[in-house]
Amino acid sequence: MWRHIASNAVTALIVLLFLAGGLILWGQRQYIGPGPLTEAICLQVERGTNMRRVSADLEEQGAVGSAAIFRMGADYADKASELKAGSYLVVPGASMEEIVGLVTRGGASTCGTEVVYRVGVSRVGVQLRELDPETGRFEEMAEFNPTEDETPDIYTDRKAKAGTRFRVALAEGVTSWQVVESLKAMDVLEGDVEFLPEEGSLAPDSYEVRPGDARADVIARMQAAQETRIADAWAARSPELPIETPEELLVLASIIEKETGVPEERGQVASVFVNRLNRGMRLQTDPTVIYGVTEGRGTLGRGLRQSELRRETPWNTYVIDGLPPTPIANPGTASLEAAAQPPETPFVFFVADGTGGHAFAETLDEHNRNVAAWREIEAERRQQSQ
Image (cartoon, rainbow, N blue to C red; front, top):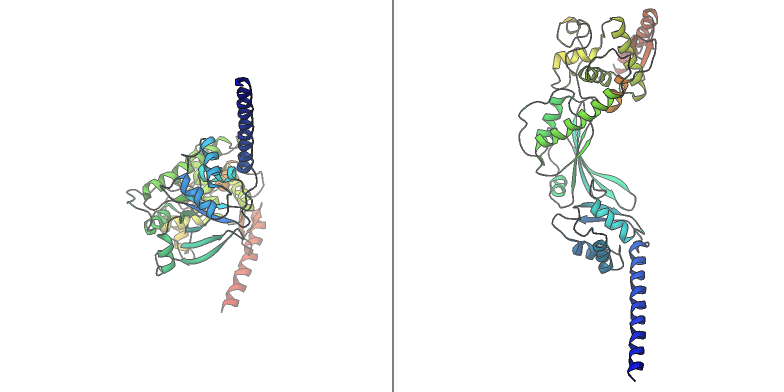
């Protein structure tokens, strides 16, 4: 009898273990397999929340079949305590494993409402936009100049909502003064900027910020990024480059940045200046003259006068030899690379060609013909505008 009872107990234990193993395998398949979501959603993970609330939200929105399995999977992967606040785009069919990775990896949010503070060379703008999960495209909700326009109500409303993300986007070629003045106008940032950052020391890029961030800390991030870019460009520089220090490389890159808005031309423009430096010719570039007039505090807003072209300033490369003493703007990575590794060309002249780009020349005669062609284009445009 006891032998029979023991045999039945062993059999029952085997059955239970088999069932438990099958349940675990089923749970694993549920965790790593495609999820039930049929349309993309934007998952909001607020600061201070926990995995239980997130899993319940996902189950309610139909993104996971079981909130309990989602939590157990996160626990098993040791990620339950690594939840990161943000707005995350969950695509159709995303597995629980993929969603756990999404909300614990951190970094930039991938959907929801976004406020972008754009710092441009000629204007500053605030853009409020929202990503449509179904199309994956941002739709603009409002745009305004924070220093000139009335603040739209929708901006005030969305700015205060949880999950709204904020970015500062610096255009290539902005000056440090423009950056600081723009940061002062951003009402989500706090604190003063005690010193104007050195010209050229801020990396043009897009920076995620949070309400309450200190302006000085945002500037420090920009400076750290630019230091890395300068170091990388300097390390990869051409051995024949007539530049002696990373600081001089930065000055040259800033001139290249201001001379052309055509990405494909940066190398040719760099080659002209390098050829001029090698030959002992003055750089004779208008953007340096403009910087001598404005010192980077805003745009000139008009053409240069002959008196300004002749006026001696530390930056007037029609008057001084070699490079000016400081950069004239904050150059981007492409201009730094062009300055460090310019292509070999015979060009020592260039002038606008009417298309937004430039005509390059090796000889003065060729350059004079290009200048005459440009003057004709300017005359035609003046006639058309009258």
